Length: 140
Image 1: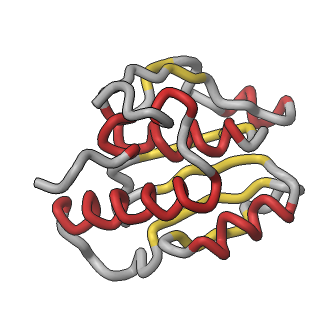
Image 2 (image 1 turned 180 degrees about the vertical axis):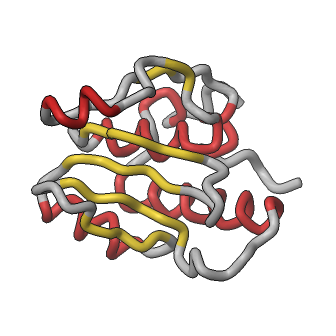
């Protein structure tokens, strides 16, 4: 196996969050209150938060593979999009975006998904910098 990536290291963490809901309608209809994130989204949630982004919903095993929705200024969503690996979609509310694995309409295996997420985390480390806990190889 290759050297552990930041994505692999973040999967070892127990990360708990509640969604950042922006309006009363969203709060009334949300069944998700607080809990542990699925381990496969940890790295990307933590990176987005490092950029000052508020995450809303995420799923490691969505029927089409993976997604994280977040609230941010357009320029941050644009930068995330420019890094590759994910498509960034506007979700309807102002400044509400979601990242999805590119080619979500094509079925991929779990192994392929893990490989893509590892490659994406390497690229995000290059562009956005490593997560502070992983800068010097801690948690390896």
